[in-house]
Length: 115
Image (cartoon, rainbow, N blue to C red; front, side, top):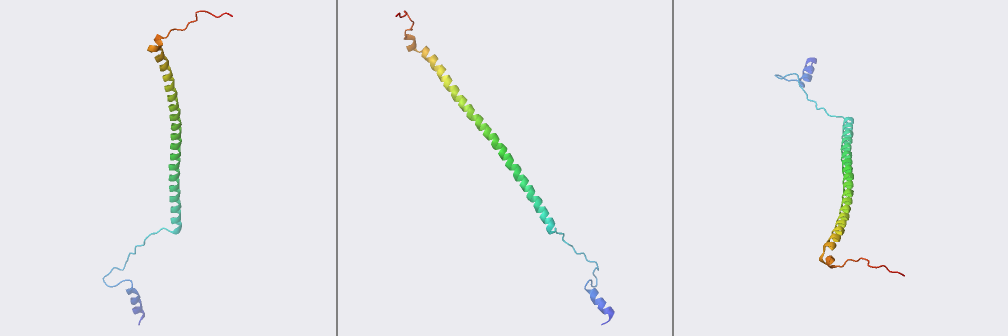
């Protein structure tokens, strides 16, 4: 085997007759382990931030609901007091205007007692 034959055998690996000698190899680009770790940490921080915003919104709505419930209970007790006062006022006017009250004799002192 001559020097030229050995070169031609080695070249035959790379090209053959009627084919282009240039070959394109596509190389897939992948992220390294450090880049993957950084991306995962950033995503975890974003998810944590989203969670915290939702929790604080829920808490603020809880405080608003609590304040409104307290206001409602105060208004209900005020309404009950007003209903009692209204019933008392109506009962006095009803008693004064009733038939039984009209037939009663008025009490007026006629004489004073002397010791």
